[in-house]
Every structure is written in C-alpha cells, then in structure tokens.
Amino acid sequence: MESKSLHLSISQEDYLSNKKNVLGIQADLIALMEKVSILKDIRSRKALIYRALSSEYNSLLKDFSKFKKTLPEVKVSRASVREDINSPDAEFESKASNMQSELLEIQAKLERLNALG
Image (cartoon, rainbow, N blue to C red; front, side):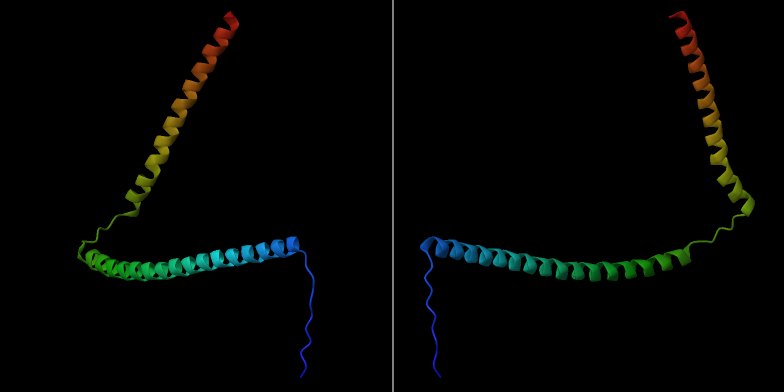
C-alpha cells in the first residue's frame, strides 16, 4: 500500500494560536477531570455518611420504641384537649381586641392633634 502524505503550509501565527487553543482545551479538560474526581469522592463520602446516619437512626428508633414502651400511657379526655385548643384562641382574641381598642384611642388622639394644628 502506498501512503499518501499531504503537506500544508501554515503561518507561524496560526500555528501558535492553534497550539495555544489546544493546550488551553487540554488544561480545561484536566481541570474538569479533577472536579469530576472530587465530585466522585464527595458522592462516596455522602453515601458513607448516609449509611452511618441510617444505622444510627435505626438504632435510635429501636431505643425510642423501647423507651416509649416503658412510659406509662396517659389517657386524656377529648373535652380537656378541646379546652386546651380553644384557650389560645380566646387569648389571641382578647389580645386582638385590646390592640383594637388601643388603635382606636391612638386614632382619636391623632384626630384631636390634627384639629389643634
């Protein structure tokens, strides 16, 4: 087989420019490869941490269920729960009415001041 060769003439400026571009691209690729390896390392660490946390969570869940079994069970009537739920609303309404009365007083004072001035 015959090999055919092709010879091209490229200016030195073009050659240097293209060589710089190629070297820049190679540097960028190496930087990307480093970042990918860092991300792989982070992912593997994340998986290890997740497994460790999962096992800790499961052991804590078992301990919590054992602890929950040792606690006495308190029976609360629904009426007392409803009273507890309603009491913050009543307190909020009383605060709101107090604020409304204070607002009316301040507005009345402002009207008097505006009438004087």
